[in-house]
Image: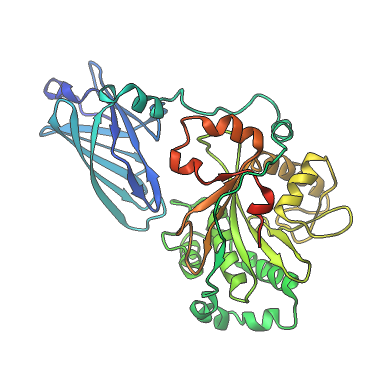
Length: 397
């Protein structure tokens, strides 16, 4: 609902505005506003990182030369208080309450400037037309179109601190995890830890989705406060660190679709098993690992190849919600979902206790994507520097 005395509203605020880039819970965000006045109310539409203005504020009020609004809901919301500095500049007091991974309040002051004051080149960066849109073909057809990799590398050298055990002694002792994995090899240790973890926590999207603190303790506490749920990133971050606490190389990867920006991706865990001389994939969102037709546990790279070849996939019996009657139907859904999300694969360079992109990341993309889509202005120059097409370099141990 909006207040009704709009004769006093300062029309200078009307128009399209771009906010300064801010960081919210580790994520760079640039907020766009479109403020309009009708005969009965003032409306505020907004979006993040482009000027599509697809969202509408739930509550708007104007008083004492200020415009106030929020979105989401009363308990989990982002609030804005705008004041006019001059014709082309608005000051904003911004706060986040119980969302974007914050339990409590986050506050930040920043400015909005008029979109029309940007140079043509600057405006092009943020135009809603400046997007890589999903293709009309099926997700598997798109993956097959972008199947081939190349030989472009980066200078990234992947590192492991292996400081997890000393920081997770409380969790290991409390849940007797040493006894859980006693006598097991690396494969069975990683799987046992996943089954234990997924027995306590499951996938969901509570307010904020992910704990601000990226340690297993922080993620587990966040999930405990949200019905035992966190998102796929939280589950994978915690599981990878738990596995590294037993001196096994493991890391989370972010599997991304063709389009940019996107509204959905997936995060899983890659574990290098010395006993197999290969990576395996664990998906804690479904308590899942997958075998090929030869009954061998596969990794993400093998999963992609099997999807491209329309090959057989065999999920483990414990996979969440996959009963005997419906397992193949569920597996078909998973095939399509991962076909969507295996166009771009992002891996962090450094792995340590509480790390999440702490020292940057690299992204493996197909050669065709590098030649065409990667040159799109939707990608920042710094992002492009971390693109590679060499699967051998990306999957180095």
